[in-house]
Length: 168
Picture 1 (cartoon, one colour):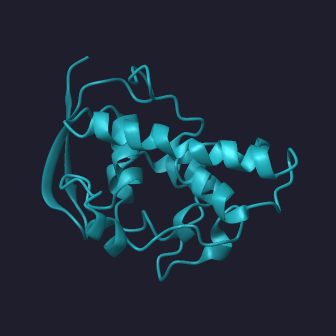
Picture 2: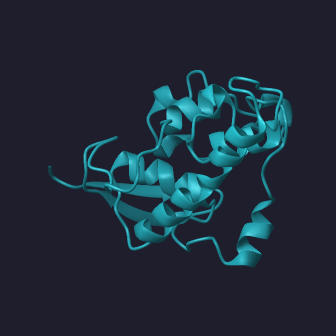
Picture 3: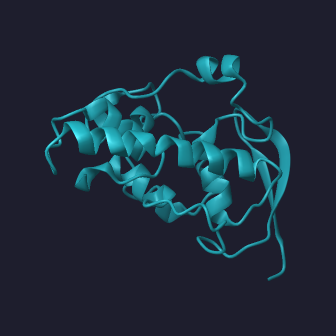
């Protein structure tokens, strides 16, 4: 596959260039097997609909056809479980969890990884994703299978990390 060049110009990045070196949705690291694609996550409702409103040109248009987006403000009612389950970006920045090339955080990294970008931050982000799985065990331990009213914030957070918490 010939690498494809992507140039990003949105509110958080100007003139950022990266290469897509893998086919879309394929050739993931063996320790990384997300249950949801970015498109599915956006359609289900994640991040209060605010996360991707100014950078749609970077990704396939069909990701946004049925996406639940809110250009004006974060709206938890758009989330699948209708609750807020995210910390503000400033919190993630204070913790040092934001990679300079992905200023929006993990989901931006995942969208770009899914598209075929590979970068030096991949191993760290995959480790973070794997560590988040502990929340699956907590939902399974404390909730009846399929009880979507049990631990909705934790279930929403799992969706935001590409774990399909609807069927737990």
